[in-house]
Image (cartoon, rainbow, N blue to C red; front, side, top):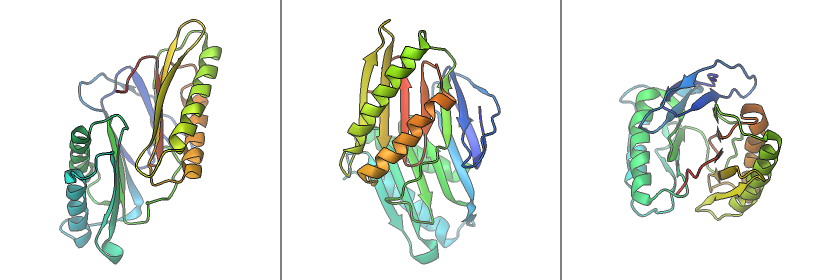
Length: 258
């Protein structure tokens, strides 16, 4: 299922239905996402924050910033928050890799994201792109240390869990335990994974993550909102994801993280 919060493009996903989320209203258009060998690509191009033209100062600053971000070899914990330019042409960017992704793989993902986002969102001053291993966002406004708890996308497995009531309860308990662990992380990483099993031996693997520029309270609040969406988007499903600019969660009935 999909809603256009902004421009949305979908590339790849296995056994999943996907939805994008509006800040105010939820309208759903069903779509089945085919299996693909490459990474999933989802993005929002925000037309409400202004546009820029090719070869403008903002465009030059954006391209410089994206190149600097993906080529930085000093950072090895998967979180990048940089700015470039001055006044109205200042660009702020955040790059976040999944907590188990190796530094070289992280930089490669962010390089791909930076190249694609300027093609998929060719003139928007604010945009976000999501890959399997990383998320990249930029804006002409302030984004560092600011909580945005509105999810951009839902994704869910088409297959239902057996003994769904127990599955859902074990899942909620697991995600809330992970939320507390992730929120207590430091300014480099707010990330947690773990698994649990139902009485009929259904495995549940969970992952939660915040951008580590958030405070512990902000991370808690963001993950609370994301977890509260699971009964809405993904009830009784064996797997699901909630993706947003400040935090994301995922669960599956198989181990999907390193």
